[in-house]
Image (tube, rainbow, N blue to C red; front, side, top):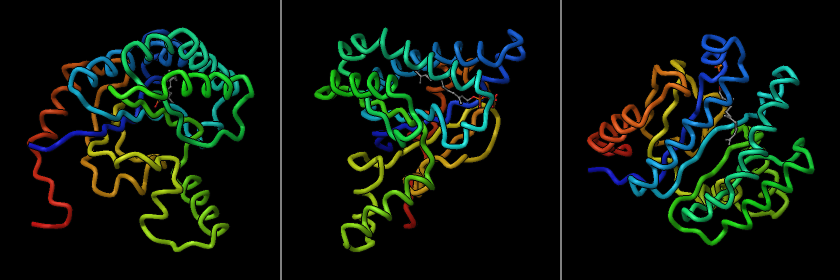
Amino acid sequence: MNQLNHVAIIMDGNGRWGLKKKNSRNMGHKEGLNTIEKIIRETIKKKIRFLTLYAFSTENWKRPKKEINFLFNLLKDFLKKKTNQLNKNGIKFKMIGSKKMLSKKLIEILLNSEKVTKNNKTLQINLALNYGSKNELINAINLIKKKKINFSEFNINKHLYTNNLPDPDLLIRTGNTNRLSNFMLWQLAYSEIYFEKKLWPDFTIKNYNKILRKFKKTKRNFGNI
Ligand code: FPP
């Protein structure tokens, strides 16, 4: 059976869920938070060490200002309310992505959650925020150039936002869309990928466990036979 250390999730479908059920994309984002909490609890239960959640991409700035503000306020409230609970549950919180363009207040809240939870070991949650894989790679290349060191796989890994993380073993994308949307393009080189039809707010523990079971049984070759 395969070891499962790191699950990455593209939580897609909030907007469509919100429009269909509440006539508001933002209500879909709000509902999506419940799925996040359920998946975090189940990930701990399954003793998985790393969970990376794609919350906001470098391309999501193209969305209407009202939706962007709603998303960031949701995140700020979540972290303000839940950081102590994350801490009590042994969760280490980390943001991955560029801090450029984020408000001072949000950066302060993110740094605080990182600081409070930094010694925890049960589960590390990486929240991909203002994250784009191409931007991450360009950033790494520039850092390597500045240091005048080799362009080796080791050095590239070391200069990505994900520097101390193992690559995801498993990527799940909900929302019935089969694409990567500029997410962890380097790190997903040998990950198993599951596209799930359900929209993120409808994604259940049962759906999650079904994917985890399938993953465990998959033969991973890494180029071998
Ligand atoms: C994808 O659905 C979802 C997002 C872009 C946002 C996910 C972020 C949150 C729920 C808030 C962040 C807060 C925390 C605590 C992580 P979509 O809007 O792309 O859906 P669509 O494909 O139906 O339009």
